[in-house]
Amino acid sequence: MKENKEIEKILLNDSAFENMLKTKVENDFKQELINAKASKSVEYITEIKDVPKTKLFTKYATFEVINKTSKTKSYINGVQAEGFLGSNITDRTKLLNGESNSFVCGNSFIKFVKVKI
Picture 1 (cartoon, rainbow, N blue to C red):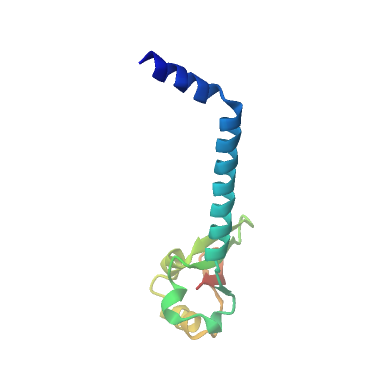
Picture 2: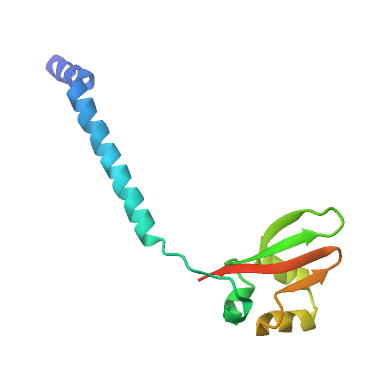
C-alpha cells in the first residue's frame, strides 16, 4: 500500500509527465478544432427567389426586424416571421414565390436576410 502511494506521488509530481500530458491534451484539442472546421461547410442563400419554399419559414431562415417608431433592429428566425405574418395571405404568397423579400406588420418592417442550407 505504501509503495503505491509513493509511486502515485512520483507520478503526480513528475514535470515530464505533466508536460507530456499537457502536450497530448493540446494536440487532441487542435485536432478537434480541425475536425470541427472541416465538417462545417455551411451554405447560405441570400436571394429569396432561390430559397426552397419548405425552408423559408423554418428556424434556418433569418429575417431582420426594424421597428419604425423606436428605430431599433433585431433578427428573428423564419418561424417567428411567419407569426408576424399571421393570416396575411397576400404577403405570404409574395414571399413564397420570391416576388418580395419584405413585409410590414404594425410598426415593424420585416425583411428576409438569409437561409441556411
